[in-house]
Length: 125
Image 1 (cartoon, one colour):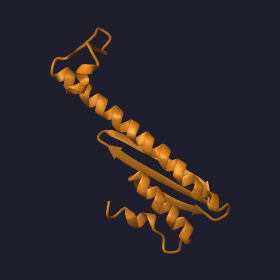
Image 2 (spheres, one colour; image 1 turned 135 degrees about the horizontal axis):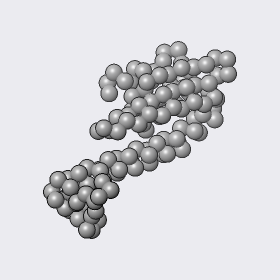
Image 3 (cartoon, helix red, strand yellow; image 1 turned 60 degrees about the vertical axis):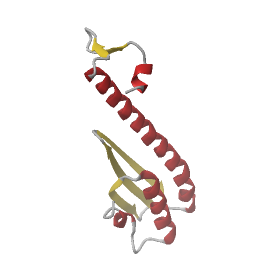
Image 4 (tube, helix red, strand yellow; image 1 turned 120 degrees about the vertical axis):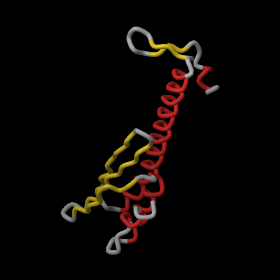
């Protein structure tokens, strides 16, 4: 992550913008793919990517560069943190299902899905 931090900093950027970028960087822990500023309508556009195991999460933040943008960062970070938590949860559940299937605790049905005797068995894996 050491090389990524420089992408968030811009020596010509106003202090408010670099504070916003720092806040977004801290909450997302992802990699900035693109950063652009459209001077015509004062729009700040950021594109992020985060890869967790085999799951790739990409998102784009686009907002007018104004003091109100600072107030967008907190709810955005909360929403993205929740999204990442849910993503981790789904990935962990899939891993548990794979381990349960490999251990013979699950069996495939004719439709290709899985049958679990009890979901409580998954927590024991």
